[in-house]
Length: 397
Image (cartoon, rainbow, N blue to C red; front, side):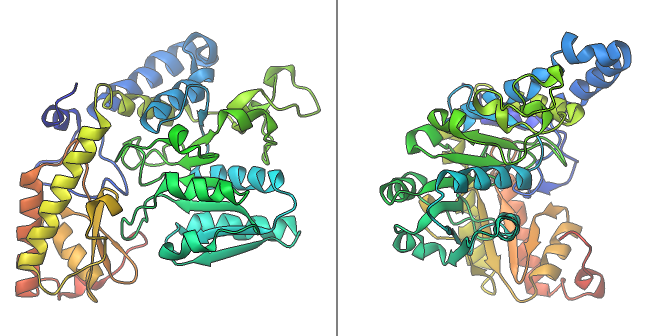
C-alpha cells in the first residue's frame, strides 16, 4: 500500500505554493514529463506512423479505460477514454433516451455542471420529440423521480459546493421507476471511492484533468454498464467506434462492447500524459485517500470558521455529504481569491460568491491547510483584497 506522504514527491509543485485547486486542474506529475518526452521523441519521432501498432497507440483508449475503471468500481471492458466530457455526456444521454422511447423527461438538479445542462438542452432541441429537461433542487431529486422520467442525469459531487449525491440510493430509486441513470464523475474520480458496479449505474462519464491529474485538455472517459453495451446505439458514430475501422466500409456497424462509444482519433500526447498520471494511483488505497481528504477538509473548515467570521460555509457540514472540496461564501469572493493567489495559496472562485478549495491528499497535507487558513485570515482581517488589481476578472476564474 502506497504511503500518501510519499506521493507528494511524485508531483512537480512550485516552491512556495500551496495548491488547493486540484478539483479544477491537477498539478503536473513528474512522470508525465518523461513519458511525454518518450512519446514525442522515441515513438512519434522515430517510429512515425508505425507507432500506432508498434507502440500500442491504437489501444490506449482501452488500456486507460481499464485503469480508470479500477478507480471507479467499473469492471474491465466497461470504460473507454477519448474526446471531451461534453461529448461523452451527449453520447450517454442520447443513447439512454433512445432506450426509453416512451418517456420524455430528463431529470437533473441545479447543482449539475452547466455543460451537462447545455448538452441536454441542445439534444432536446435537435431531437424535436417533445423531451424536456426538468431541473430541481438537489434535495428534491428523490421526490421528483416518477414514471415519466426517462433519464436521471446527475453530477455526483456538486462542482460549486461539493455536495454529494447518494449514487446507489438514487440509482435504485430510478430503476424502480423504470428510468436510466447517467452519473458525471468529474469531481469524484480520483478523489473518493466510486462503485459504479455496486450501484448498478447505467452510464457514467468524467474528465481526467482534475483529481486524476491528466493535464489541461486531458481526455474524458465514458462507462456503459456491461449488460447494456451491445444494446446502445452510439449517437456519434465515429470511425473508431466502427466494428472494423480499417475496413473503411461506407456503412457504420458499431463495435462490440464499450468500444462503440469511441468517436475520433485518440489524442496520443494527452493520453500519454494521462497514463503517467495514473501511475501515481498504483497501490493507493482509495478508502485511505478519502479518509485523509476528510481530515484535511475538516481541519480547514475548523480553522476558517475560527478565524474568518465573515465567511459562510457553503458546503455540507457533514463530511459524508460532500466530496473532496470545500466552499465558502463572501460578497467579495473573487477579490479575496485573487489576493490569496497573490500570496501563493491557489484555490478558485465560482460565481456569484464562492471561494472554492480542493483537497488532494496525494500532494496536500496539514501544513498546506494551516498556511491557507493563516493567509485567508490575514487577508480578511486587513482587507488586503480591497485593491483594484484583485477586482479585475480574467477570462478564467
